[in-house]
Each structure stands twice: as C-alpha cells, then as structure tokens.
Image 1: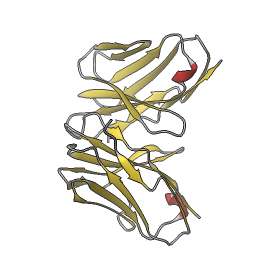
Image 2: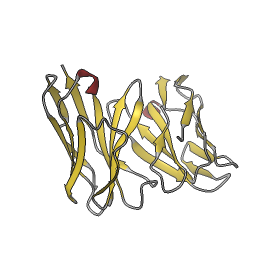
Image 3: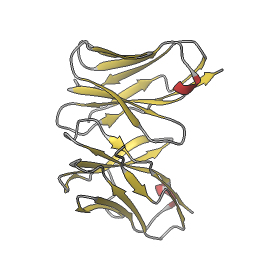
Image 4: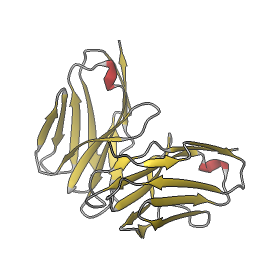
Length: 114
Length: 110
C-alpha cells in the first residue's frame, strides 16, 4: 500500500535548537499539507503546496517556521529556534486531486521541546 | 473564516450501543469528509459527501450530509471495541483547504 512517510517519528530536543521534519508524499500526489495537532487546538493547518509550489503558509509563525518542497518526493518543515510551545505532533498529508479533496496522512512526528 | 464545530467532544458507550457525532459548519460546504484517528495513530480518510441530503453507508457506519450542506453526522450502529478512536469531520467551501473539526473521542466499554 502506498503511504506517506515521515521522519523522524519522535524528536526530543532542547529549546533553541533547530528541528527539521521530513515527509515523502505518496508518489503521484500533487498536494502536500503540514498540520500540527495538540489537545487544545486540535488539527491546525500550517502550510500547503500544490505541484511543489507553496500556496499558503499563513497558519504558521513566520519568524521561526519554514516549509519547503525541494522536489516532488520531499517536503520539509523547519523550526528555528524551537520553543517549548512547539511541542506537538506534526502530520504531513498528501492528496491527488485538489486541496479540498481526501488526504492521506503520515504517521506523524511527535516533537518535544524541553 | 470558516469554522467547523463538532459535538460531543467525548462519548463513552457500552459495547453494542449506538453512537452519533454531529458536525456543523459556519458556511455552506462543497464537500465534507470524515476521518478516524486511533489512539496514537494518524487520521485515516473514511468517506466524502458532496451532494445535498446525501446518505452513505459503510457496514455499521452511516454518514449524512444536510440539505443545506452546512451540517453532517456519523452514526455507528452497535459499537464494537474496534470503533474506539477520534472521529473528525472536515469541510471545504470549494477550492479551499479542508477545515477540521476538533473531533469526537469515542470510548467503548466492553
């Protein structure tokens, strides 16, 4: 079965450190999304791409977060510098048909900032 | 901006009882989707509804889309322990990214 692959699965680091999360979307999918999930806020959309072009990143703090898609098989989400409030599960999802169509989620990166 | 509200936030049922979660949007939707997330897992797509008044069934699960395309429901008949998890609705107003509800966490007591 085709699946979205995220690395690392878990990350624990100290505040101030750079964190890079990676995502390999399903081959052939042309939309990629980054979400953050917390108990309080639920699933928040951080950024999304179509055909590797960033469409919107208004959901994430611009001063510390950045999302890129250097090629069709890799999307990255970086946090620099990290803060304890960034602790959450970060999901990548990909889709085939459009930004409002069904999405396939990866297993997520569980991030803890100490 | 568009908001999607889900109720209840939590539901505890005895195995064999029915379960329903409701989803309401602040705007008319072009489509609504339902996802299930098992504890410790990731959201998994269940179904998409696009037509006003549409009803779809998947075994013991029944999904409805309201006539005004602003609300939806998921009903599970005779819950089983395998139904445990959080059920999310997600809607779009058309060519806009999905907005997810906060989810309903279902616990099933055997």
